[in-house]
Length: 150
Image 1: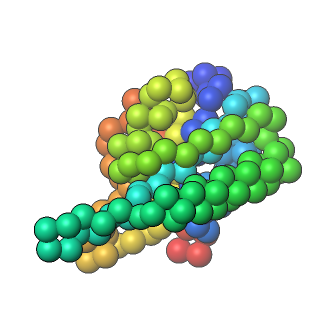
Image 2 (image 1 turned 90 degrees about the vertical axis):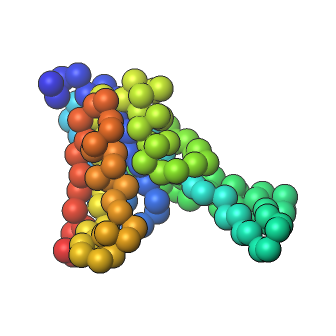
């Protein structure tokens, strides 16, 4: 199965668990001469107040997208520095687990490598686990990396 890992998707939220997962994804991409795809899924903050819905201004959205692009470029460069041979990055807006699975499917990813935040108990019940939802619905294998400090 591993000889088929030619395209590895690594969803990132710029957290420490994402950094750990990226390091594993880089190692695997180097070992199997795979393309590494870094994916960031963001959600546009929208507020409802009485009968109105408030969206961020165009300026705020531009700033948000510029910041995401800057962080993705930094993470791409770091992955290349760590030894990945080919790194691509993408950003999409939406619900994280839905967009991760869709992106992996549309790009024919053979493996998803992603970090977990290690939430348990009530916190896990309230916010759920993106990684858990991806594992349940992905078409390809999913390797989850637990936090290094857990």
